[in-house]
Image (cartoon, rainbow, N blue to C red):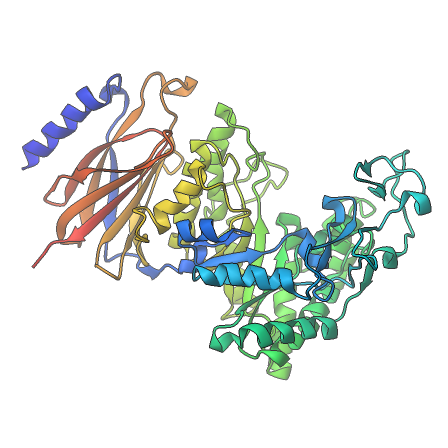
Length: 553
C-alpha cells in the first residue's frame, strides 16, 4: 500500500502537474495530533455583515451584522439614517415610512435562513431627521454655511463640510439634519423589536451592538460630535444604553465598544483629536492622563467590571473590536509584494513575535491581546472581531488569506467574528468562506473541536485541523499561499508536495475538496493513505479540505 501511495504521488507530479519540479519544492510535513490542544471552535466566528438571504444560505452563515457608520444615526421612528462622512452628512429616509421597517427586514432576512441577526443601537447624541415629505436634509448646507470643496451632484446644497481653503466648517447646528438621541428613545426601539420578534430567550433578537467606532466619531460624525469622545463618556454611554436595552429584554446580549482599530484600542477619540497639540507624546494626551496612563480599552473594561461589582449589573456581554491591516492589504492591489504582505500579515491576529512594519510598529497579537485584557480587567467576557477585511476579494490571494483568517479564529479561540462586508457569491473569497461552512452544498462544515496542526512556515503553507461532532470526522484545511507559475518568485514551481503525519486518529477514508485560481470548489478523488501517512501534491494558491472519516468498526 505504501509503495502504491508513493507511486501515485510521483505519477501525479509527472502527468497531472506538468512543469512542476519536485527538486525545487521540498516535501512539507504537516503534523496533526487529534488529542493535543483540543478546544471548542465557536461557529459564530464564521459571521457575515449585511449579507442578503441568498448569500447567508450559501455560506450557512450563523451570524449577520447590521453595522457601519450610517447605523450610528439610524432613527427607527422615521426609518431613516444619516450617512455622515461617507456621503455628505446627509439624512436620508428609507423607501418605507413604517417605523423600524429597515431593522425588521434585516432581522427577518437573517432568521429566514437561521442566521442570528446583530443590530446596532446608536449611542451618538444625535440621529437622523428628514423633511416632512421624507426629503433629504444636509448637515452642511451650502446656502447656510457657504461654499465648500465638494457637494453632492444630486443635492447641490449638501456640502462635505470643508471650505474651499481646506478648513472645516465649524459651529454648524446639529439640528439642521438631526434630532436628539437618548437611552429612552432607544429603549422604545428595543420595545418595538421585542413586541415584533419576542424576547431573546424566546427566539427574538439576541445581539445588540453599541454603536460603531466611537474613537473616530469626531471625524466620521463631526457634524454632530466635533469634539472627540473621552473614555469616561464612552463608559457612561455604555452603561446607560445597556441598562435601557436590558430593562426591556434581560436576556439580550450587549456588544461593545466596537472600536475601529489600533489607536482606538489604546487612545480615546479625545486623545487622538488632541494628539498633535500634545506633541504626539501619549503621556501628554489629556484623556490618558485622566485614566492614570492606562490604555483606553483596558480602562474601559476595568470601569465596567467595577460597575458590576458595585451594582450587580452585567452591562457588557461580548467585548468587540474591529481590525484592518494597515499596509494596504484592504484593497484590490495584487502585486507580488502585496500578495506576500497578505500572506504574512495574518500573523497580526496571533503571533507574539510578529512586528507590524506599518505605522503601528508594534506586536499586535490581536486575539491573545484581547484575551489578556479580558482576563486582567473583566474576566468571563466573550471576545469578538465584528469587522475585519484583508482585501483582494476577486483574487485567489484574497481567498487564501480569508481561509487562513478563519482557521486562525478557530485555533486561537475567538468567540465571534463578522467579516466586512460579505463578498460577492461568485468571488474566490466567498468560496473560501464556503470551504468552512458549506463546501459540498449540503451544509457540511469544518469541525467544532480544534486540534493541533503544525506546518513549518505559515507564511507559505498553513494548516488547521478539527474534529467534527456529527460523524467524528477529522477535517484538515491546508492553505498553500505560495505563488502560482508565472509569478516572478516561483521560478516555475507551481505545486507543493506535502506529507501528513497524523496521530491518534483511526483512519477510514479521506475526501478532498479544493479551491484554486479556477474559482471552483471541486471534489477530487479520495486521498490514499497508509499507516498514518498521506502524501499529496497541492497547487500553489489553493485551499484544500481533507475530510478523514474514522475507520469503520
